[in-house]
Length: 359
Image (cartoon, rainbow, N blue to C red; front, side, top):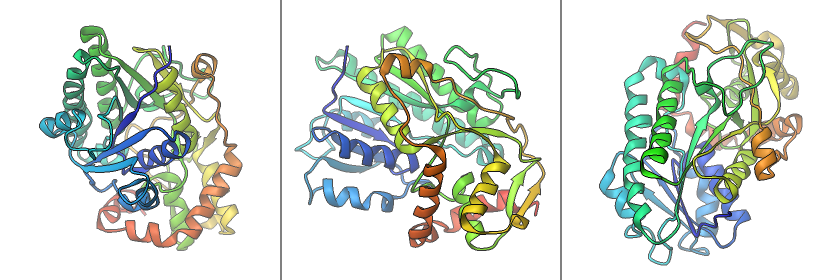
């Protein structure tokens, strides 16, 4: 049975994945309204959505609105779900895509309590606000955006994660996300709550903040600075273009089954050192910029996603080939230098220090 939301509320919509999802949704679904709910912490940047606000905000077709708010604010979030704080011309949200989260592993090692507060307590607050919608006459969906990191680590010869792989998180970040996923599952089972969980692999693409691997390496290489690579550089990740992630989330919203989990991956496994060398080669920079640093505590060796279920049941396929997607991403950072230079403010310098203190 398909579900066709009229208004999608995206928590964390000013972040990397959230902003790209909002842009994709408004471009591909002309009848859908979007409410962006974001606290605008260090990872939230409305500059990433300036074009969206111009085309679809109050001066455009009116399908996009932004609400500044914290996911732990039960009263505000409840009011928003009732349609009392969004633009009056927009329908009340009938779908919540929960993307808001603290997401940087290194930060979670330094301050675990922040991740528990946002990722677990924040999720409980959002769930409680949404649970009131179950008793309304209109249909409703809740989509929990998760991560492959909740599954833990694979050895080189183990099969890829499936939706039935036991959860075995190894960092405070992944543990907090696993806890959030389990809370969502409990609401489905206990309250007949209409939720779906998706778990994605590593995303890449435009508007990603420079604390993440690909933009960190691009921006540092452009500046001729050392590129810090953890351990031996052979940690393997599965790379997913953020636009393919967006289309997969929409497939889960509209065609997914309530209570189910769907893995989303790009089908490209690469050791980190290979990825870094590819970026240097594309930029024409020497490999002498690579500098190995002591490995991160609890660093998972390999992630790989089995996406058979979402492909078979929902008819989803990734459209981006990694080589062309990576080159387009590098080009984006080359042509949008003013954007990433502005976001390299004091908050991001703190993040860089976590990587670079061992250099």
